Length: 198
Image (cartoon, rainbow, N blue to C red):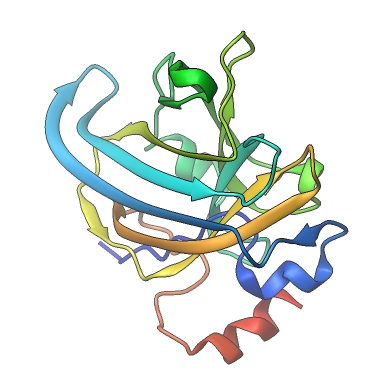
């Protein structure tokens, strides 16, 4: 089984290509853990814990996890056959102390709202009275029959569409060990990654 390299939406190296602006003061960080659970959707339950601070009056719109970039080796079918989401993809704290539930989906054509292609997991708040704030934390879930392999630390991007701002952070932990290799299994310094996304 090959190790998987996972990135989250808008690897830091592509930020110069985006028509939206980076907020240098904001932050987002995530960690994926796994446990054996024998759930109806998979033998392994993966939990993505995320914290963010937009340093903005605008709340979180959604965030994406880029699983394979446009130059990657996986197809959407490669990922779709091994990854499943439940009816509720996760939850976070909301403004005023409420709880926000999220829809989760595999986005095979990237995220047009932020001008990025590739294969992504998209986590978007369900419509309702409770909305995520500019600062918050949440836990998000997906399932697989594949065991977890270590994630190479990469860039995570949070996008706040209302203010046209985004920020990047770090992703650590594990991800299902897919047979295809998103991006590459070879560790490269940050400068050499830039050329892949130009």
